[in-house]
Image 1: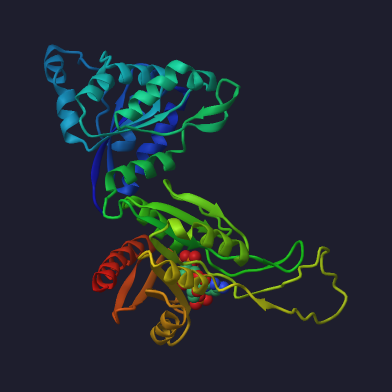
Image 2: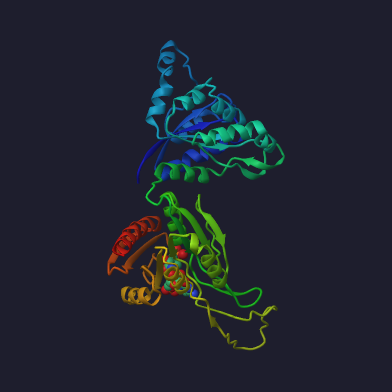
Length: 410
Ligand code: PMT
């Protein structure tokens, strides 16, 4: 895993204690934190907490206690600024936002901010009325215009007893945003990628449905990978337990019919379509409005095919001739590659990702996957076992190469 270094500036708000969770989260994403605390932050949490969690000295003031320390610390903010890739401020109080916006440098953190010429991530937390105050909003606007990432505070119960926007975003979310800022690339800038993910649910009656074991992990990994490479991402998702990745547009659907409608409606704006969802093949056409009663020992269900979304998308892509790339998935338990080749032809897509779902720990629900890519140019590319997020990046790498090969020929 790549490693980066980030300064975590802790402001003096009641949410300062959550910064302790943040400094535990960051190393899981390869980000080594150096904590800087304002004087107000030290009223809420002791520096020792952060020193113990990070194993590093916490920077608490611009000037040291002894003359030697004063001399060393008078330039420390410059050294710290040069040694780190990202400045995270969490929680950022209204006071810190105002100081950053206006260039006031009266302690270590605000002085470091002025000396810092790399990316800045700000996670505000305060009372709702303070957050919504025109002065705070103008400061946020100024910081965003400067290119800083300012997260929206979350809504909920606040420490002051009021309810509204002002809660510090969850540390895992701040950590994810930090990772995104450090790892993002730009080879999909200008692309709009539509990904389908998860299962569909086909109702049998008002309380029962047909579905499958898809967790959405593969599709969500693809959506995140595309977003982190600069694409605008539309994620059409069946019902799953996952948090949507940051920076993707989520369209929630339940049934195959709803997924079809969502995909076809957004198709004209997309450049790459990746269909990793496990769509139910059959559904009940006339769903009873009452719960099915247990009246007989055996119950027969009459099922009709669901719309074949991939085939409909392929027909539309051919008709529109906009140079869009269509990638299907094939979940198979045997003859994986030959079945994928058959589906590539039958569904007229440019690439099929063949997923052997019979192997232990791969395919449905797992964090890992192992797939074979079968392309319209005749290539068969094996992607050995890896995390789904890594597999997602490899699929996107091959998709870009394939599009070049397909469209530079015509
Ligand atoms: O979600 P996870 O737990 O991470 O698991 C990932 C996965 C195993 C679900 C994923 O990697 C996968 O293989 N997805 C495709 C599953 C599937 O439905 O395969 P299929 O062979 O039945 O369908 C072939 C293709 O046609 C798929 O792209 C599917 O989205 C599409 N399809 C299927 C039926 C239908 N009515 N319309 C469709 O568009």
